[in-house]
Structures are given as C-alpha cells and as structure tokens.
Image: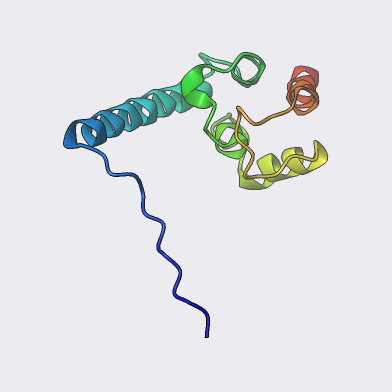
Length: 110
C-alpha cells in the first residue's frame, strides 16, 4: 500500500494580498469588457489588438477576442483559428510570431 501523499496547498496570502489580487482581476475584467465593446462598435480593430496587445489582453483567449469582432460568431472564429493552426484555448500573449502574423494577415485581406 502506497503512503498517503501530502496535499499541495496554495500559498497562504494575507487579506491585503487577496484584496489586491481581486482588485487587479476586476480591473482587467472591466478593461476587457470595454475592449470587446470597442471591437463590436469598430472603434478598435482586431489587427491592432493582435499586433500590439495591451498587457490586460495577454491572458485573454484569442477565440474570445475574435467572437467580439462584428460578423464573427463561434463557428467562423473556430474555423479561422483552425486555418491558422491555433488552439481555441490559446491566449493572445501565448501566440507565436508566426501565428500572430498569420492572423493579422487574414484580417488585412478581408
């Protein structure tokens, strides 16, 4: 019989640290929500976001950003990512230069 393994626990954080983390996460969510509205309205282009992403977008999924673009639904966004050989779970910050250039190139042609 194998000995019981110790449970790995998250590091203990003070209340101040937890509150700071929550505040930072909320700020990022608010900025992303505004960015999605700006993408929908056409005030910002997806090429700008993918070409030079702001820091608060780096952990956002590329798929979610594409769905926010007008005339892009889940199917069209999935097809585009598949065409560029990019996983739907890939984050904006996790894109390679090739993937980033290919995506921007596809939007520039449209």
